[in-house]
Length: 410
Image (cartoon, rainbow, N blue to C red; front, side):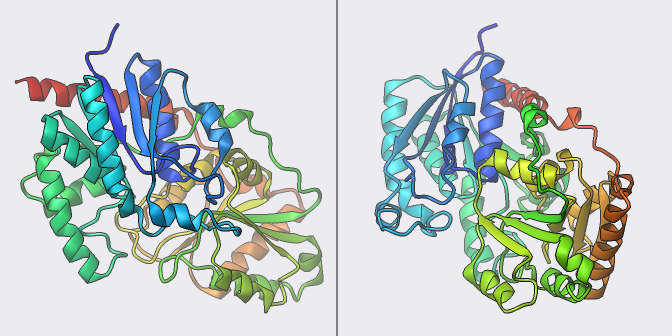
């Protein structure tokens, strides 16, 4: 059946750039396209030197989805034209705004769309969509990863300014998608003008093709892996490093243990390890392609997860990917409202420990002993993956889109 409208997604983060938002929309759009929707994407023209660049992701994008790329901004262009590569995204993603708006206006003049989607973070995607909404009156659904006005990890000043911007954005949006129920509840408390029927929770997902990715072979090693980035004053690895250094005094652990860290890592963490006795046991791989990251997770003996100090409104997408790797997880919890740690505990995917050196050390040592006796696989329950597949999330999104379109026609 032919779908009723064409869709335009406005987003800064999209393949070949990786990252949680890019992967979320790669998979959601593939699902929508498979159900017959006509889709275009308005995004940036990324540099191949961008540390998040992963050419392999483009091969996963369904043929028939149109992608329109505009100049990302002078600062991004300058930073990625230098000889040395740049880690992560430019900190000034807002510079894309005039270029995204210009191309957005050109697209809506050229083609008749029936719906606008936008994704954040970065928040600039919503701002581009807001301009199109203002000019065309088209229905608009905004998808959030984190709130701007009440994010607990932001400074009070940033929350105050962000709240004012967010209030204006949400006043014009026809629908709002958030990744879990707790965030939906908080949005409804924070912005009283939002009606519950225009807000929905659509969680993160996993691609059903994840089963085809082969585990990396680490040989006869006890391998702990962490996939992701560290953030100052949010989730940092110092207690893990100290626990590992304490264990390094045991000869059999030092000889067999390897710690693999894959993701953009600030130099201060690398320098910290170089000053410790574990420097020969730790490998920093930097940002790696998605398939390679999954292979590392699958091949590891155990997976490390670090929850944020203030995690009330965040469920890291890497929790689901880690769970799908079918390896036991050591979750380090720093907040009683850490949704990632709660999920790991509820699904019996591993163990949850506080961010205390002695507790982390004891758990890693226990897993090491189990590994030596081939009993480590008894420490977790494999997750039933079907309910988390992206194709099911896409169906949830389709239902919400149709509900918003029906509401707008009244």
